[in-house]
Image (cartoon, rainbow, N blue to C red):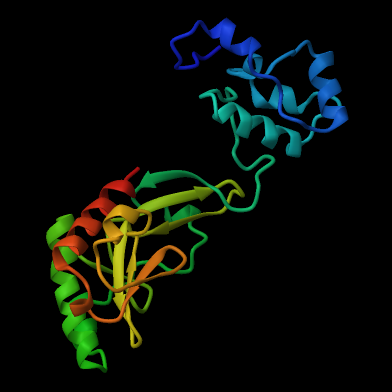
Length: 230
């Protein structure tokens, strides 16, 4: 069995962790197989537990999530079995086109040319500034993702549901209403110093670059680049 990562002996810790509340058939299945506490499942093949009479995918999902809290996992864990909707499981470096369910993919459009052709002066000026800033912080060349996102780097993500996709590590889009910045959320202490912005689902909205502190924005990009790495 795998170690727990705690200082106390593994056998002492196992006895302190009961199974999560699950269905009566699943509880009986574990008891019939001789399992009495959660830690005993660490390192056990998931397929063997799933094969127990009365055990189903939902119960496997409950067991997996409880085990994760203690640093334990099945020997052949499959995050898609008993998955809940949503929930990021893993991030891998680079694109995996053969496993990409995301409609937004890199294109052959040249980012600087696309920005220079945008209709509003604010879009063109802010876009050009962001193009330079993101490249300077990340050290990466920009790539157009879909028709309107300038991205830097690439990662492949997998959710508990089994859905997978590719996305840039960080990026931006100088849209008509405001600048959308991607991959920079979750750093509240730094955002408090940024200036005027709105937060959305996974992105930040800035009406114009003059509304925010440029040094703080640079700091956010660096944090996003590091935190979104595999």
